[in-house]
Length: 207
Image (tube, rainbow, N blue to C red; front, side, top):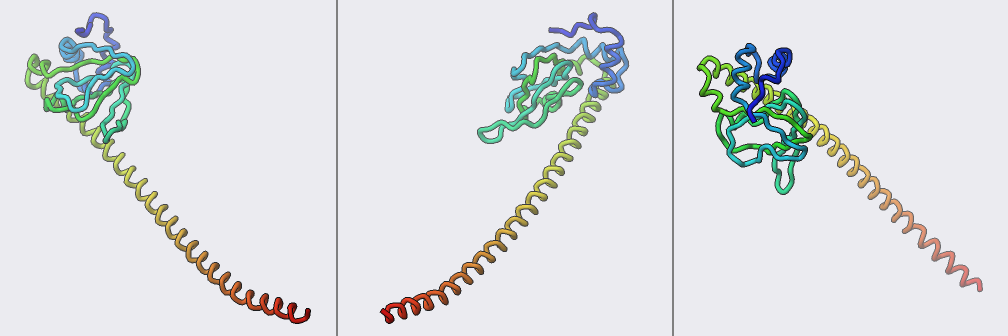
């Protein structure tokens, strides 16, 4: 369904322009021009919006609700993130018309704005360059967040590795201590047995 501009107040348009990175640096008329070419898409909770591996050329902007981004990992599905209002998904598909690298599902009932490459054919080159610049900015920010997450994950792995090494060292020390104790017990047992036998022998001789 085409986006209904008539239902939007100027204050709401201004809010979208300021809070949605894709519309950064747009004037109100620029924003209206883009919205005219967009489609509203409503999805109930759990509905699939984008399927990993499929070819797609649309990106989606979350207006209401939340979406979950996940990726196949063997037979399981690994959740990468949950995005809310103002966030975008599917940018690479719009830029490259490539296969989707992840699956996107509605994490709640949501309203999305579907943006297709056809919009770029209806605007002047300077305007489309701004669109691509904003997409590049969104991807750069996502890359930064992902890089930070990878670094945090690596730090956590290193911490866990150090903890594991410490446990292995402690386990080895306990093992060595136990072996020493067992050796001492064997020595004590070896000395105790002859004495016991000598006591038993004397007892028999006295009978």
